[in-house]
Structure formats: structure tokens, C-alpha cells
Image (cartoon, rainbow, N blue to C red):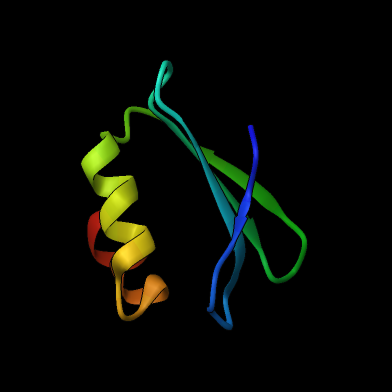
Length: 60
């Protein structure tokens, strides 16, 4: 899965696998976490969010 860099103090990059509906998040600390059963529209919303950190806390 390719990761896309994002503008966030908390999150470094994110990636998405549509087949498994998995969202990969690399935090600024270097730690990786995978979230399962994430619909594509939630991932797209994350990429478009004004605050990725707030979007993650509210929607993922």
C-alpha cells in the first residue's frame, strides 16, 4: 500500500486499500496503525479534511 504524505502535526502519511477497506496511518512518531472496515468515502473525507487530526478523532 502506498502512503500519501499529509499536512498534520500528528500524522505523517496515510494509505488506503480499497479491496480490504484498510486505512494505514503513519504517525509523526513513526508508529504505524491499520484501521479495518474503513469505507472509501471516509478515506476521501480524511484527505480533504481541513484538520486531519480532528477528522481522525471524529470519524475513524
